[in-house]
Length: 144
Image (tube, rainbow, N blue to C red; front, side):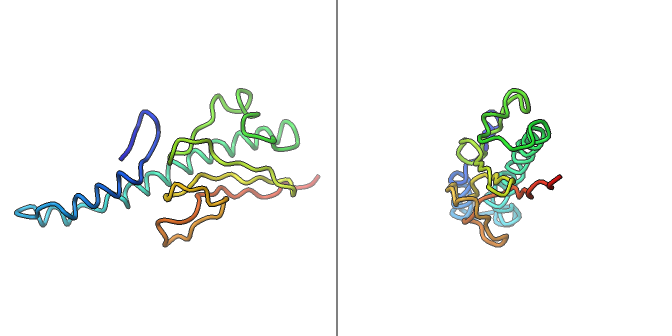
C-alpha cells in the first residue's frame, strides 16, 4: 500500500487489501477483523496528509521566490536549487505537483487526489472519496 523509499501511496492496493479482508474467512477472527479500520480510509488519510506536507514545502519555496523577485516563477523548475534543494513529487503516481501562475498574481498548486486523476485543480468534497484534487489555495499578493 505504501512505498516509504519512493514516498508513494497506491490507492488500488489499498482497495484490494480492503476487499481481501472483506472476503477473508471469519472463523475465530471475526471480532478482530471487524476492529481493523478499512485500509483505504487509513491510506487515504496518510496520502492526503503527506500531499499537504509536500504542497506546503513547495508553497514556501514559491513565497521565497516571490519575496526575492516580486513575482512567482513561470514553472516549479525555477525554484531549484535557490529556493528548494529538490521538489517533492505527488504521492499518488509520483508525478510532479501541478502548478500554474495566475493572471491576478497568485498561483494554483495541487496534487492529484485519491482517484489518481488530474481534475484540473478542482478540490473534492470532504465527504467524497474518489473525486477532486488536493489543493493549496494561494491569495493574490498585496499590492504595494
